[in-house]
Length: 460
Image (tube, rainbow, N blue to C red; front, side, top):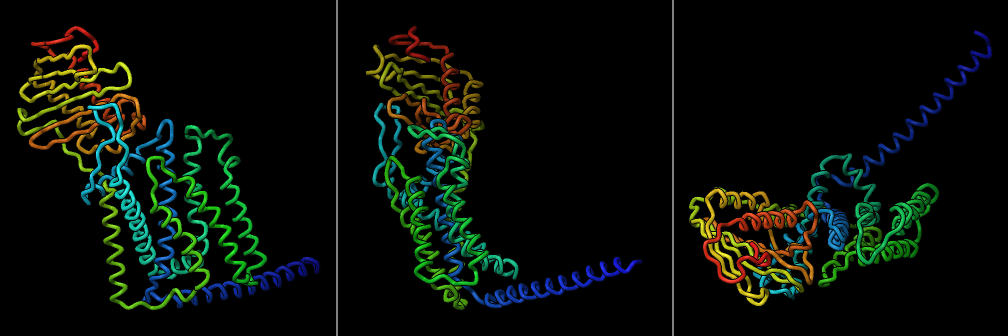
């Protein structure tokens, strides 16, 4: 081996040894820092204020992200899914549980639609608060469970500021990206989300500023007034965006304003007070806090849980079955009538007085197979789980309703027959089932008829 080659390998060996020593030094420093961080947050201690701030902030971010998604689905010309229906159904559960009066906006006895009452607004406020508290309780439980490992404690400790500042913008941007191509009236959007969204451009600017700060100014601690100004400018923009994107046309929801204030309040408290948020808590108080979180999460889960379906196609007593299909009027030539099918095979038809030129009454019979088929159609639409008050509706369109009574269980669902919501959603399936039942009953063998018996306007 030549002298130049030997010198070259010796240089590499010395440099490698230097790099290795430097790496060991850096990793030792980081390990000591992480260990010190974990020692500050020992598993035997409880840090309630820290968990409350982080959990409440993430819960508020998830709430507004979901609120933006649901409200845009509601305002879309063609709703993409049943998210709005599921939200309203859960809201009416709360209203019914506390005993407030909430009637259906759509009825087959009149064209006029009923706007939500004050009791519905009160129930909506309680539903919003309960949903946010359930999310906050879930996040607090997750923080508590993850605090038993050193790695998770270190991650949460180092990422707390980023979470407090950017959880809400990220949730909003995700909802905005998912709904960007949805068509609304009168809003017209041009371009893609990446090039046409102003909040997304602001978010990227903030991320770049944060990275530059961490790279070049991390050793110099900014003054308090500068930190407060940065927090103020950040949250004043995102609070305006979230507030403007979650407005409802039917009635305002004031609870969202209180939840919106959680975002800047949690960040300010954490930044200004820092380590003072972590006093050891008494064991009994900690146990009470976690028990309360579990109760809130359980209640919120019950409100949002799927409805339990009950099959109608296997009645214990077929003679007790009653199926009534009714159509309501509209501002035009829409036939309004009611068809009632009894379990013993009797079928009765009656047109609504005032919407037909001549009031018509018919009576006929249907066989057992027809009755079972109609009940099967209702089961396919999950009729017993539907909430008609949560359906979409318009102002001048006809309505359709189905009422059943099987083995003493009575259920009625009324909805708009033109505004069907999502194309494959619950309202669309219900309307399709009601139309099929209407078609089946139109083939009834009528024995007696009074009025316009041959007119197609008096169908079925």
